[in-house]
Image (cartoon, rainbow, N blue to C red):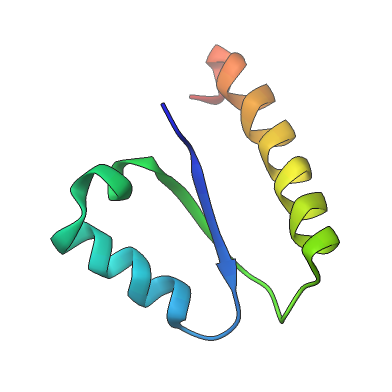
Length: 66
């Protein structure tokens, strides 16, 4: 299963998520979270994703966090 983390400024990320809910159900199922960020560099996006998914994976592996 693919996991998608949406990030970016303003409302575009939320509009995309809403579009997927109505028109791209397979993509919508993969979206795990939406985070705000203000024009990050590529390196900042990678660092944010690594940090997020490290916590996400640790929580998913802990049955008490479900």
